[in-house]
Amino acid sequence: PFHHELAQAPEPPSYILFHCETASAQGGATPIIHSEEVANFFEATYPDFASKVADLGVRYIRVMPEVTDPSSAQGRSWKETYNVATREEAEAAMRRQGTEFEWLSNGDCRTMTAILPALRVDSRTGKCVFFNSMIAAFIGWNDSRNVGEKAVVLGDG
Image (tube, rainbow, N blue to C red; front, side, top):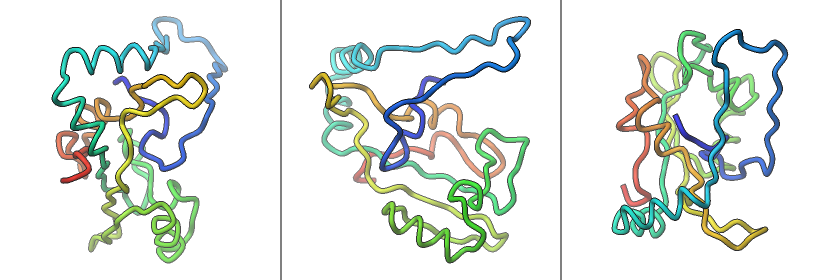
């Protein structure tokens, strides 16, 4: 689903690169969409909701497993996500980000990000861009630990 890379991180990358080692025999395309156009569409089509999103921001909620689950697109462990070996190191990284966390009895970690802007101003152009993972989270963050419809909330909730 449509998303921005690491939009759920407080400091997302300024640039991303695409690389293909072996071309797909069929399909394999990575569509790219202009975020300014999406912001314009969002604000024109859903002005009340766009205003709420702009005013309140969004928070992302997910449960990260203790051990990476390769069967899920959301299955990256908290150890890999934060590049740590211990809970204490993970907690320090999450605190630096402003991420709230809860350790579950099975070793998984439930997280809620700090409030992040979903509509941002591009510092290079001064224009509003739709920069978030709201759609991807809502429709795609589903696995045995996560429910997409509960994976993204407005900043006040």
